[in-house]
Image (cartoon, rainbow, N blue to C red):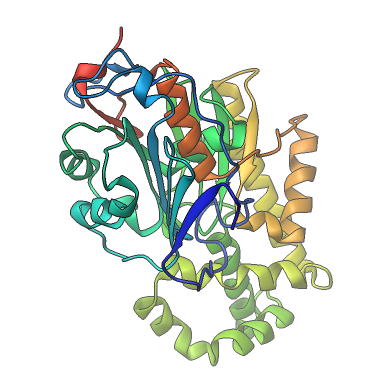
Length: 367
């Protein structure tokens, strides 16, 4: 615990499973310095609106400098930071409700808002909270708090680049998706279609391909791998039970669990090595499409799949053949959430653009 913060740790078991979200392998969020102005958001009814601080009823601009609540929900649970207090307040709930309601979320962060409402609240919804309707979270916000709800991919991009600026981020996790945006006219997603229709090169794709290669060996058809079959039996039991496991367990997570095994076997098994090489090609294809949509803008990639050495090597090789260079990721989604808050508080513009960004607080719109 740092000397300049108040930590509220509600569960000491902060265990994140193998890749379920782009944030799993990223470093802890950086300590942001407070911004120099107070800020706010826009009306969700008008997609042309932008968040920019002008003034807000009940808040004096000088009194709310740097006063914001940043909340990130993902595989690490709920992580919240409240600035504008001495010391800065922190709340971490590693094991959070898998089906949260909007009221539950605001209730969970109540220890950080008791006594005074923040000038601005920014929420990033990922993991199990990704399916929560942003409108419900906006409607449940305290009356004097302007609120922004952003998709986890947007916070990942901002956190990776360290600023609200155009760019391309590839999230390599259980699934895979690439987000391309200039925060103005370009809003594009590549893949993210799930393990059956897409997610090419992801952990679930690689794990599924590895299991299929093991079964091809069992069937005696080309492209099979005995090492993959034996490893899969060791991990999941008799192959006759695998279809039932796929029906009863979360499919993407089940397949993703086998991805690190495929990566380990790539050192000795040519089939596994070929699958990892193909995964790298798929990932490079996706980020290169993003580069074509935003020429000259920074490219970055995040995700626990980068911890699999065979994928990291094959991805780097595929990018090299395409003459693409990635920017190192500077921070995670919590860092991105904080950067978005500071950007708006400092007078920066942020568009209301569902499903990526949702705003509330028309009285604080600046044009």
